[in-house]
Length: 272
Image (cartoon, rainbow, N blue to C red; front, top):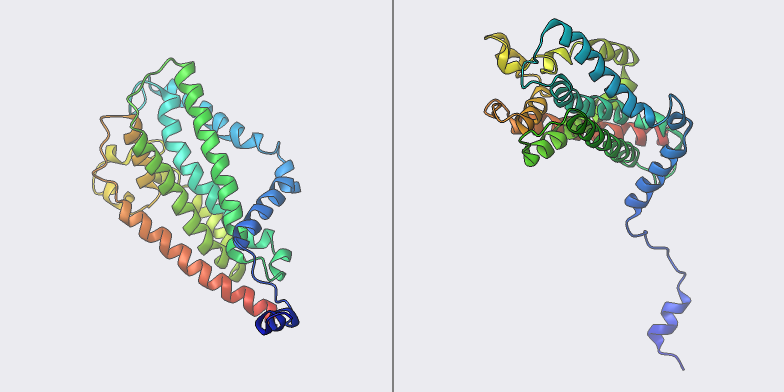
């Protein structure tokens, strides 16, 4: 005879428990889907992530090298523009990719296991990894090609990359909602975002811009990771103008508002 408790347990239907690390498994699956997607195979695939910044930095170095013999900081044009373009590129790429993540995975959001945050985080992690690889390759090529030996402060460089990525995630989550609610806003955002690179200190350090214009430009959150990246490569650049809390608050606010609104929009769409 089996114990009564065991008989009761065997007689009850088995109820499947939720899988461990379900969200992590979904994110990994979405990352693999992104790798296999047609979007990843077009425009030279991931190779374009390296070609674009290299071409931009080379063009800027040639053009401004003709105008001036030395860059605003240091003596090497490629290194100067790389320290400005990379943080801005991380922010812009992650903001764009995460903003279009719900639209890219719209059909998959009908499955209960797939959440909006899974689609966003999958794109965020994949493209963040790509951007970090681009940064490492570009840094190695510039330092080796021009035989440079700068005094690099790695903690400041890592902090700059993380701040730029966090800002891209926060703005991307907020834009994901705004793009779906107001399709015209996506066009307006793309137009407004173009001159943002010039106002972020990529070409001219904000610390070199006279007042009161420099004070106004520090309200641009992406300017802070760029200044932090420059401080990581140039000892003469300080971080006294960098407000990490300001960037973090904007990033967290955009992420929180975006995720709450996305959750509500996806739930309403599934119930309708």
